[in-house]
Image 1 (cartoon, rainbow, N blue to C red):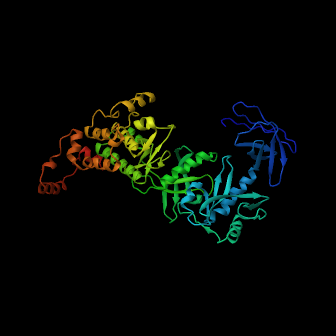
Image 2: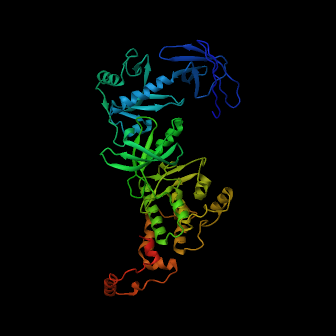
Image 3: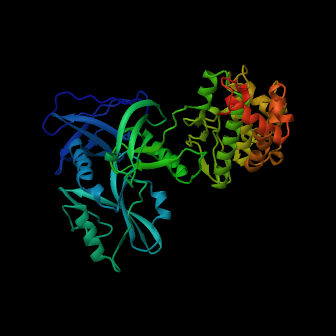
Length: 503
């Protein structure tokens, strides 16, 4: 629903008028029937179906939200109930190791390995209601059971007798262990699920797809304290957005490489849900190159090699990045590069999508644009585009000044559309990465080897720089040692621009 408005005027004791609009539809009115535990049912007087997920209203000085239960009624839970649940988690539930917080059900497949093993987690349904769920493996099938709260007590009608109510969820769990044949096996959450109190928030660094990105200090489970970057998901995020948020977290959990941004943990026991990751103070390669015109070729070769190594690790983890670009490559304090931003990434060897939503068109391969194919070789194509960005110092977007539609035509039809005007050796790597036939492109392990002579062979580097080789390269080993000894007593000698750039 794109537009929704709630308005309430003077209310009779047992009546509420709910007003909302959806694409210009008529205002609807409802009748309020009081129920215990601050619940009520609003019966829509008109017969048409209501599709709004949540409608807020006011009764007296209390706020509440209306959640659809059927075509003609809503279940209403007061903000007081929601506040109670939040405080209950904060003060008690989060300290039980079998409580995992806001976690996707899909993650449970690798967690619950034995029958009657279980976790308690927080979930959100399609109507934006937050629920407590017992996820348990029974008869080799993973099942999900809602923990219901009525009359200030808790129950699980699908696991225990519907007349069994408990004042505390841990009491309910204990009874469950006594009742089920064979007992239960609580699964403790991993150390990557961290307490909110272990994160001390700092300044906001920027806006992410789901909320703010901030600088912070994190205390890791072993007591180590580190600076980190924290992504925070907004409280009003939809079920789909939360799933996308956790998909990125799941992808990052797979990595362990000095060339990929490290995940420290997820604070999901309370709200808002936060993800803590390695803080990279150097910013993006895109920003760095635009602001520093005097970056040496040696440093750019290092950047290109670091990115290839990071992408090789993704390939080893069977992850397709799908959004590789200079803006998504971040720099450490000493200007080494790490791959970041896995919002579009998938764990697969190949995927085919029908619609390229939010796709970075200028970085995509021909087969992606024509068939929706994503795999390692399409990431290799994007890597070729990143090389073009690096060696043009990110002055313009790829294929500038062409429009997006014109760029699509060029990518599909032109041979090596991202060719540089200079840089012969770099152009050779771009050309092989951007071969029209994906099978002709190298994988990232081979690309790493292509950079080795660039990084190690001084002759190649100086040839690219179009500068004469230093005389040292013509000296014998004995002569070099003798010259080195003499240079120790010489002060103020300037080093070449190339070597100063590689420090």
